[in-house]
Image 1 (spheres, one colour):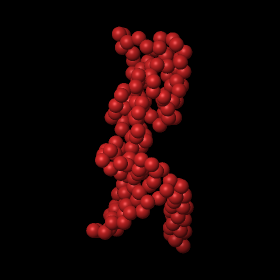
Image 2 (image 1 turned 45 degrees about the horizontal axis):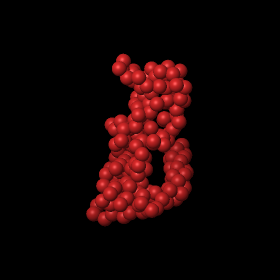
Image 3 (image 1 turned 120 degrees about the horizontal axis):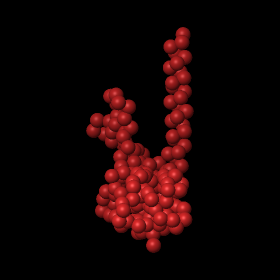
Length: 175
């Protein structure tokens, strides 16, 4: 039995709707299907999305009989028992590298910049996740590893600096 990251109302009535459950990283991968009666689609969708998954509603086919609250878990999806990947993991080469890595997040301003900056989450098997920031300037490349706490503090400090820069720009033009 798989322990799910969300709980659904289990009223036992015949299901009228099918809710497809997708992981938030790979929306093209169907992880499971939840079945609900006509009274509980909103509660089910709210519980599933609060757990970090996306949903798509579908009608029940006539030949399928399920009860409200039943969830079918696909063995290859993120809901499967024994899934050792964090939800943010890109699932590419984890076994080879012995670490989980998210997909790369580009810091792109849509204009030419002096350096290219990319971010990603990384977690070795025995450690907490960290944020890895790589900056490339021509042929040179530097990497900074931040704890989640440092990344959180940096997010707020950067926000304050950007706000201050924008306020300074607004007052420069007012003279």
